[in-house]
Every structure is written in structure tokens, then in C-alpha cells.
Length: 171
Image 1 (cartoon, rainbow, N blue to C red):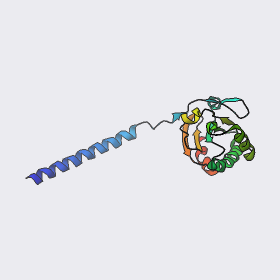
Image 2 (tube, helix red, strand yellow; image 1 turned 30 degrees about the horizontal axis):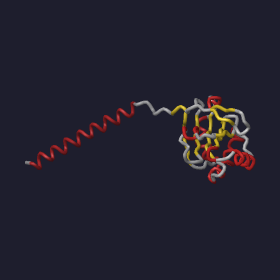
Image 3 (cartoon, helix red, strand yellow; image 1 turned 135 degrees about the vertical axis):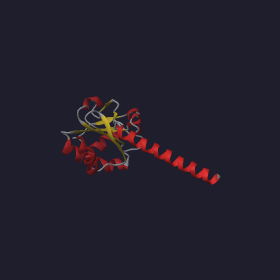
Image 4 (cartoon, one colour; image 1 turned 90 degrees about the vertical axis):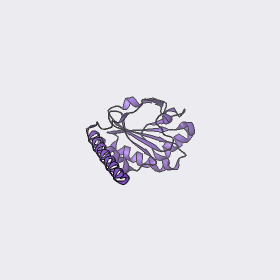
């Protein structure tokens, strides 16, 4: 008798769990898609001394690249970013945010010259902007759509082909 009651109980639980799973799947199909997160505005000085704000770039696809001159993966990534920028600067802005709190302006200037960087290089002397974006590992790349929403975050060095893959859908 106990085995028979246990069997009925197990079957009832399985049926109940099955119905709950079906209901959950139906609900998930009717939910709104997850929205992208709005990027937080910031202002930082460039290596040339002018002030740049992220909000100035609204309407453009933006690549935020957090880096340092001593970072070997950053050294690997920068030629790819520069090449991508040369081909797509009409459609994309790159803001290279140097984590100056862990670097020096002299080293940044040498780095820019070494790689012939033509996109804006911003100096995050306090490290506040890097921390605000969670760029604790460098390089970290954050891609924003034309509405200033975060579309993608990549930790580690980027190559030009990977940039194209992430950026093309945003044009």
C-alpha cells in the first residue's frame, strides 16, 4: 500500500512540475526582451588638454577602450583599433581611456607616437571612470550603440575582425 501511495505521489509531483515548466516557458515567450543599459556619461581631458564628454558622441557608435601603456595585450590591440578607426571613423568614434592612475602621461605620449594613434586618448587620472565601467582588467572594450546604450563588453585584446563582427550590426 505504501509503495502504491508513493508511486501516486511521485506521478502527481512530476505532473505538477511539468505544468509549472510549461507555464514558465509560455510566460518567458511573452516577456519583453532584456533592454541594453544606458552608458553613464563622463568627461575626461584628452592628452592634448581638451575636455571630452561621452554625451558629445550620442548618435554615433562608440568604442570605449580602457588600456595602459605597460599592458602587453593593450600593445597588441592598439594597431587593430587604429586600423579599424582609419576605415570606419565616419561611422564610429573610438575613445581610448587610459587608466592614467596606473600609468604616466609621458608613457601615454610615447605610446600614441609609437602606434600613430589618431583617435582621442582620454586620461582617467583618478581611475573613477574605469571603475565606474568595471574596467578592472585591461584591456576592456565597451561598445555603445547610437543611442548611447551598452551593446557589448569585451575583456581582453580585440582584433579588427572581431570589432567588425560586433560593430557591423550597429550601423
